[in-house]
Length: 125
Image (cartoon, rainbow, N blue to C red):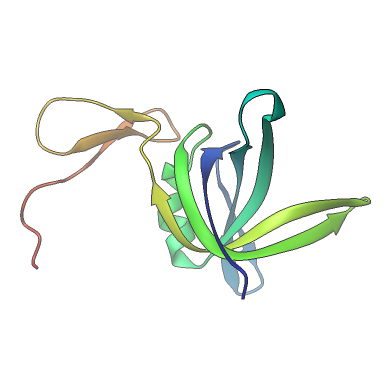
């Protein structure tokens, strides 16, 4: 296995589709490569399989910052080679977090509405 961890921004909203008897959530991550005059961008096509993709898809919106780790691969299409990553773990970095009063952290959903992560101390460990 070629494990890779990348941090970058989503280039578009995640899309979930049925593939046989399973579901896959696909998204693309742009990662800055180098700085200064040599600056460039690497693009990774990411795929997250199963129920986790369904639950994360509304939060994986264009411009959001994420850290992704998983198995590195490539695919060929029309003579071009694309970098791929089969996602094992996703961490939302909060690139589009909206601050509001009260306990918890608000975030903007793909449909434009605001949701809230509850950060209360009721954690059972």
